Image 1 (spheres, helix red, strand yellow):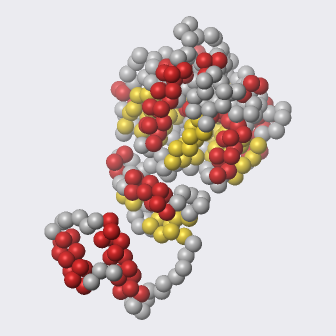
Image 2 (cartoon, rainbow, N blue to C red; image 1 turned 180 degrees about the horizontal axis):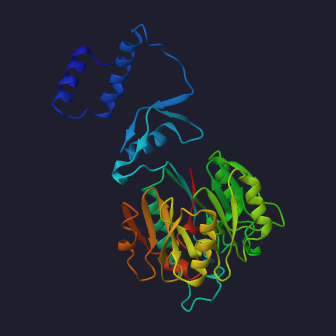
Image 3 (cartoon, helix red, strand yellow; image 1 turned 90 degrees about the vertical axis):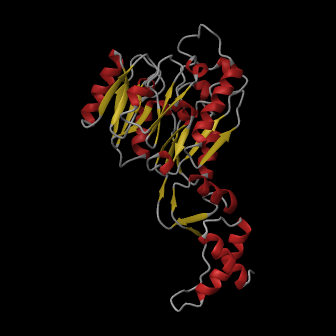
Length: 351
C-alpha cells in the first residue's frame, strides 16, 4: 500500500507528464478504491462482469485485457463506452478469425484445371503465414486450427461454415472428399459461444458460394451448392432474404464477386460476372459494382474500411480501391490460386 508521500510523488510525476510503472499503477488502485467507497453515493459490489473504460485507438490494450483477464466467453466484459480504432482511421468490429494450417498433402487439393506449375507447399505455408499476420492486425483473436493430411483442401475453411452475427450454419461441403473438414470448425465456433445449426443431407453448401451483402444472403448455385443447401440457409437465417444466383462457369459465387464496402461489390469483368451482378441488383438495387480483371482478382477481404486484395495476379489495384477504403493491403496467395483458392477462402470471420 503506497503512503501519502508516495501518492504525492506520483501525482507530481504525472503532472510533469512522466509515466508510472505498471506496479505503481496497480498499487494506486487499492487506496483509490478505499477513498471512493467512503463516498455516500458509491456502493461496492461483487460482479461477474469485468468492467473496462473507453478504449479509443488502443486495440493492443484491449488484447492485453483478454490476455491477462481471460478471453470471451470465459470472461464477460462490459466496456463503458465504445471502441474506435483510430489507428485504422475507422470503426472496426471486434472479430475473431478462424484459419487452418496447410497440410503436407496440399498439392493434391481439388482444382477445376490442373495447374501448369505444381503447387509449392512450402511457399503456400509462407503465404498463409503472411495472410494470418495481416489478419492479426485487425481482429481480436486468430484461432489457428491444425492441418489434417486427410483433407488437402482444409485451409479453405470458409467453405465449412456460414456465420451471421452470433449464429452459424455448419455446411456439408459440396465435394465429397471435403466432407469431414467441418468438424473441427464446429468445435472452434462452439468455443466462441456461437449458436450452431447443421446442414443435413442431401443439402450441399460451400461457404464460398454465400455472400451477405445489402442485408441479403446471395447464394451461388454452383456445382458445390445445391437447392437443398439454399433451403438450409433460409431455415437457419429466417429473418434474412435468401436469393439464388446461378454460377455457370466458376467454382464459387465469391470467385466472381465480393464486397468492397457495404454497398459496393467487386465484380469480375466477364460475361458471367456481369450477369451475376444483374441478378443481384434485382434484389438489392442500391448495390453498385466495380469491374475487376483478370478472372479471380475480384475475391477480396473487407475488414472495417480496409481492403485486402490478391497481389498474385501481377496488377496493382490501389488506384481502384482507394476511393472506397482507408487502407489497401496487397496479399500474395499465388499458390492457393493454383487450386482455385481466394483470399476469403482462407478464413471465417466471427463477430
